[in-house]
Amino acid sequence: MEKKNIDWSSLGFGYHKTDYRFVANYTNGAWDEGALITDDMITMSECAGVLQYAQTVFEGLKAYTTEDGRIVTFRPDLNGERLESSAARLEIPVFPKERFVDAVTRLVKANEAYVPPYGSGATLYIRPFMFGINPVIGVKPADDYQFRIFCTPVGPYFKGGAKPITIRISDVDRAAPHGTGDIKAGLNYAMSIHNIMDAHRKGFDENLYLDPQTRTKIEETGGANIIFISKDQKTLVTPKSNSILPSITRRSLLYVAEHYLGMKAEEREIYLDEVKDFAEAGLCGTAAVISPVGKIVDHGKEICFPSGMDEMGPVTKKLYDTLTGIQMGRIEAPQGWIHPIC
Ligand SMILES: *Cc1c(COP(=O)(O)O)cnc(C)c1O
Image 1 (spheres, rainbow, N blue to C red):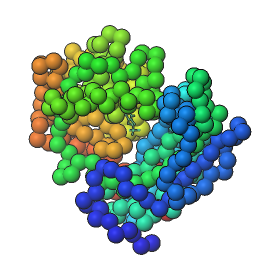
Image 2: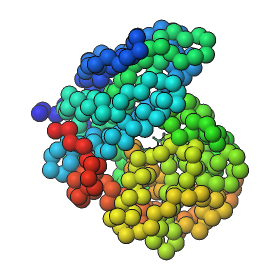
Image 3: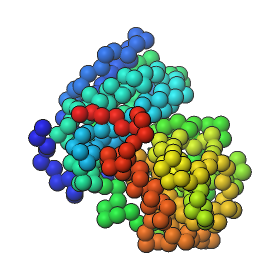
């Protein structure tokens, strides 16, 4: 397979059109077979449900080349499962997870020439999404939907290695206690855009959201879950809440901490007050795997982690190296984590 003539090392995290996308349509109460197509444009009514009432959910995962030259994806069954629950919550007809994994597999295979080579730091980012496509003006679910997956080669999330970031405690809330914080829906992101721009203008990299009900507990940032490492380096602690997105990276890190690094892994409520007692912190998600957090600013009060602002903390680094080692085929993976494409 001849690769496309792309300078993999200079790719950023942006959209770069590839040859194929997978599209399935839901009409007359059923999903059609779906197909790989070349047309990257979507034509729909100006009154489409997605445009009027944001009836859309999405996923994000990656394909990459392992050390021994295979192309694989990481736990796509969990993305399929999560998309099922996101869709159900917005009254979008479920696209079965088995079909999801099959569609991802076919899409990546068709776009094999765009999968970055091992060692380039680049990956193929895969974006599945589904949305209401027919006209909807009274508030109700659409009748017709499209499920689409495109992919785009992306560069390493952090060029020149992961530098610790500074995040601020947000005054704005992300998701209500019994709201939609636990599904991957564009509506959760729309509200975050103004707040992230405001954070950037004030010199912060990200917003850390608190639980809206009591504003005393840590939730997550706009697009990543958060993990903490205890002072004795023996425990990974991560917030438990119904209003955070169940990150596949975070769930994998809990497993890695326990089963590969001999640590304890705790999911529990974490109070803002106790954050100063942790040794390290990191944001986790598919895009960056882990971004180390050096500092949390709570309205002028700085919480500086002992790991500092120069490099990842030692335990975070071990977690990062182990999980990326598993993903890249350098370390043996737990059963079912690596999904071979070709
Ligand atoms: C996608 C997402 C994450 C990260 O989830 P992964 O499955 O690890 O990629 C975390 N928080 C939010 C709000 C997200 O949308």
